[in-house]
Image (cartoon, rainbow, N blue to C red; front, side, top):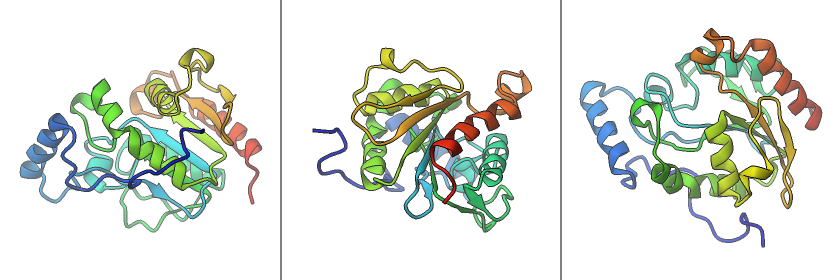
Length: 221
């Protein structure tokens, strides 16, 4: 039986999720300093019946933890949403805020860990604690045909959630893997962070090349 078959809980954690004490403590601290921020688990951002799922690692402090929408408000979102718009996976205009009217088209964006971790580094137990929400998201969206993992940790977390051996699907920028037993393929990219783009580890062309592969895999409808 597939790991996605069975009864799963909600696709997003409750806004007062108590499961990771370290992440809860950071949330509560930030609520005192920035009471107008989201400061809670960040729900997935999606269109109806998405065929592309983009997975990041965790919300950024001044990005999704502030705005409440994945990859919204920080540099990584600037590149991601521009590319999604260029390849027909979004409509409207991205203005780095959740009320900018931007809509996803045939796509969903989520994070492996839904709460902001200290130093942007979730622990192994925190990643595992949040894994049921990733499985619920996949199970609730059978339309998904391509999964884009942004960075090695998102890649490894996704494979572990599906109980697939990492040695069989090694992370590499631009890699494309059909996944045995599943109807979607996995695509890899270096994370679209400011650090990666500033150092040249990831260029805009490299990122677009990955989306070219994804668009060839799921042609525009």
